[in-house]
Image (cartoon, rainbow, N blue to C red; front, side, top):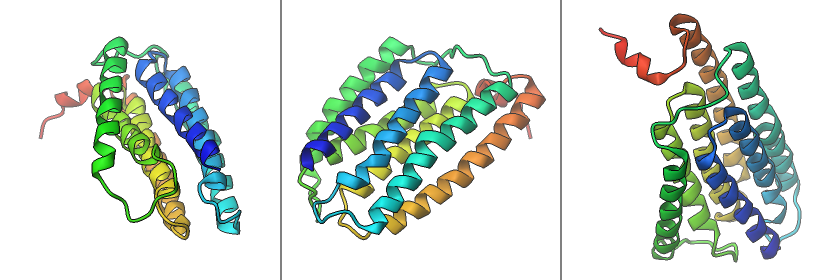
Length: 214
């Protein structure tokens, strides 16, 4: 089981780097969908106590939400708001990947200094979860479009999800379901916000929000 968990975590790292290096919005959303599918199957292999109903339920909900529903909502927002497919990030894609590699090394060095009360048997869980959270935070601050910032928020939550599933003892799946519910509400709210920003400013470049006074 640990081999499957490590493989999923490696996929998570690769998709994080792809997101940092992508300048096409559609490709970024599809990469996040791939990341969501990988995380969706993680509960099935995270623990060696056998498959329980809670693990199967969480896998189904996470795969459907992260791998299908959220990407579909974002692609739909791209079409409705007529968002440009090519992004113009504040930090270039090449520099973003380099920063991502530095973050990955830092997370790998930091993780052993953070002892956990529970170990799933994989030493990659904590560094990969931290790396994913930092990548999401980086996307939040280094991208201009509101929708890419929604994407960064989703990536951050993916890191929390990975740690919650593989880094905590069995029985915490209910908490993850609540996180997914909160995230679903947040995505809908952000979708409405993006739509209003697009209609008001004819753009979703967040730099234009600095024009607001009051």
